[in-house]
Length: 167
Image (cartoon, rainbow, N blue to C red; front, top):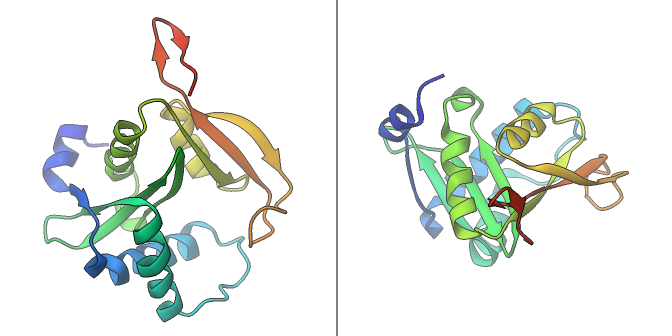
């Protein structure tokens, strides 16, 4: 795996703009379809997902996109309050440090701590977040998400003088 400094030279992270809605939707759709085949069939058209990104994600969250050297959007992260609502990457850039770059932005925005929901079956994401200091705080049977897929809440709380701070 390349060092983060190599990753920072290969990929750039910037604030998302309304013009990024279609690219963010593409990342969202592609990532979920490729990395989470256990999810039920998608109920929303591509155009509906673009509208959701434009009208909900970009208006209710702080959003960053990761771009490759050609300027193509290859990932995004969205934070609302203390919640990391979304962090998705195109499958071809996984394990290249892009997720770490986006997560570092989210942690800088919320230095007191972050929480997120992840599907229990998403072992790749669970391992990624564990490597970055997130711990499981609860399990759910899936009744709180539209996919009805069992999930869990993870939380990152920074450590100060060897003790987790109140997040």
